[in-house]
Length: 311
Image 1 (tube, helix red, strand yellow):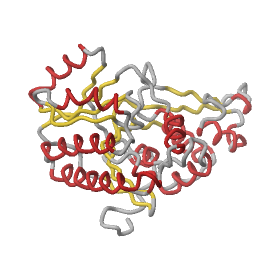
Image 2 (cartoon, helix red, strand yellow):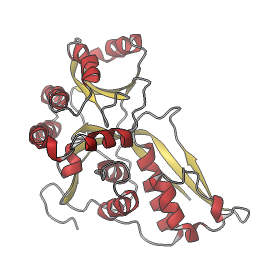
Image 3 (cartoon, one colour):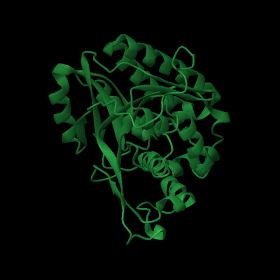
Image 4 (cartoon, helix red, strand yellow):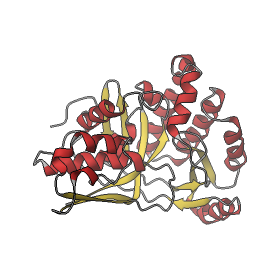
């Protein structure tokens, strides 16, 4: 059996979603894959292709009885870690595989999130939001809140602009970043910043629904600036982005994810995409035009955006 899921991109809402605020995420090709093959020569002790202390490794160890005589093969389509959800993909594909091997139906997204939290706890310095888990399980674009749980899929992006993901060649270690934030009093000391970031995210969601590229680009700019003012994004990283905000055709840009500087998300007027990609390459960054996908792995969203239970 073979399961696959997309990568994830935080459009807005990172950090505040840890405290239950809304996050807007998209999911992108290419897909991560996990294949399970019955193989009598495979020992269950060696079945996991993942690091033992990773969320996927811990989950598979807790369900090793389902993996007897099963060989697992993990496929990561990216040459280097670039912050689009490799670890979360490992976890949800492991969950899907174990459920299939046991003959159980795929769980709903809320159950997958609960499984994830039960495995990771606060080992990353803080309990992670799990928004990436939900987005990659459901396929994006999706709005996720975790307290109370809400997940709603949006229409695909068709606005008159394209998204570019630019990889800087750096890799931020999310767990180390979260530990540093906790030492600074996160999340309680950052409450004033959260209020503003939540409002910006709600505006970004409205702009996405309206397919309004100008308003969505402005939301990206505002979100990055608010992160910097609130002490959630390194000042030197935001300073790198400031000139890009003024490039012709760039409607807005921000870091995507832990704000350590590995991945930058840009919304660019369609007629400027080629020129902006060339400029990013001149920085020795690797730009890729985002190929959004709604690839859905399992279970329905727990709640739609109107707050009523889906049938």
